[in-house]
Amino acid sequence: NAQMGLEGAQAAIDVMRNPPEKPKEERPAPRRSMKADTTRQEVLSPVIDGYQRDLSAYFLAQRGALNGAWKAMPSDEAERILERAIEIITAKRWRERIARISRLPIETGLTLGASEAARTLGVSVTFSIPASEAALAQVTNHLDRLGVGIQNTTVDDVKSAITDVLRQGGDNVALRGRLDELFDGYQDWRLDRISRTEVTSAYNLGAIGQYRDVGVQTVKVSDGDIDDPCAQANGAIWTLDEAEA
Image (tube, rainbow, N blue to C red; front, side):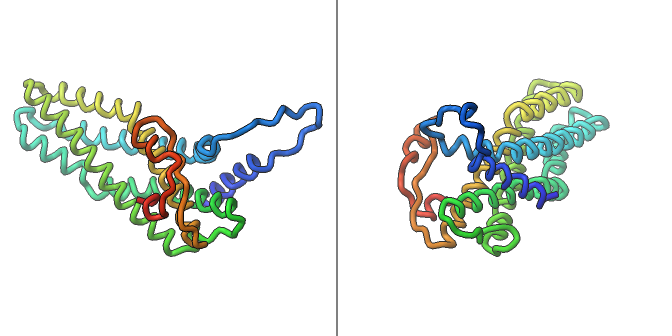
């Protein structure tokens, strides 16, 4: 399935780069320009969508585990409630699950980034999974950091929610309602943030790895102007180490 996914994504790139010829009278006027970021997002969109669905199931499962824990626990045991919540969220099974559902989209993003960089340079892809040990190490390190980051954010959010309810004298019903509200919010924004950030980051890391393999020294940053940090970086010339960081 992973190989078929990569082949399908590569086929999408090929079609966009070399669209079939249309009869002369049907061919639209040529576009004067195309933003690189638009093409990148089009290529990554199916990967991001699939990753969002898996993340949704992940957070729904965590939500169910937390809600199930409160049913038999008195709401006046504030310290125990917090302890139990942290025990649930930091359980090994959740770290293993987030690594499992994140590996394929991150590997796919990295391989697509390396493939596009190789195409730009006119060389064969070398920074790819599983051929390159450096690429495998890059994915492993990325998954480790991702698991810790997601876990820490969830712990902080849940602790804050529980503390607010207990401070107001809320019972188990209020506690479950507040957690439902929190995880409903994750569906609205956190799934999108995680999936787009991680897959796009992996794509960039794949491109940088491929550039490094063939001796490229610097890259020109394309980061848009949605905020000041992006605008300041946009168009800058960076070393590969700077871009990777």
